[in-house]
Length: 159
Ligand code: ZN
Image 1: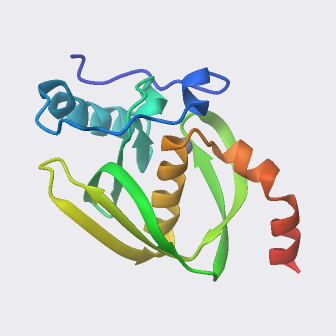
Image 2 (image 1 turned 60 degrees about the vertical axis):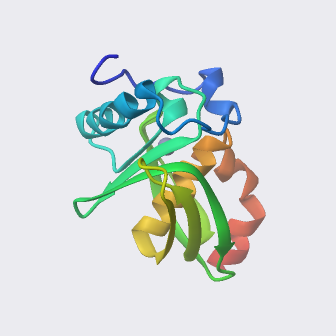
């Protein structure tokens, strides 16, 4: 396997597909994929990367914020605050653009780490935004789509 990948951009169809769950955590390709995803993300100066962004239709994403690395396998948002925040988000798959996106201020995310351990993060701020952004990717949703869906929500929020 290559040690990093080119990042795919919209309108590449893989970015709009729902990903498949990962069933075999011991798979050697998966274990090689994880460092390659971090390397790809670092090269592109991102804080998060989801597998569809390198053309792989699997439910895995990586995030690195404040030098803390997260490997998120089959992540799900198990609770999300009603309280919202709006933040100008960028995406490595939509170069040079930012979209103000309304998201929950606080989320709880359950996932498996690279060793297969069940993990739970309850967080807010930038990490909560990044988690929601990457989990969107795993459902085939990019920020341009979220932005289009949020016309009314944004107006309410900005009142
Ligand atoms: Zn993105």
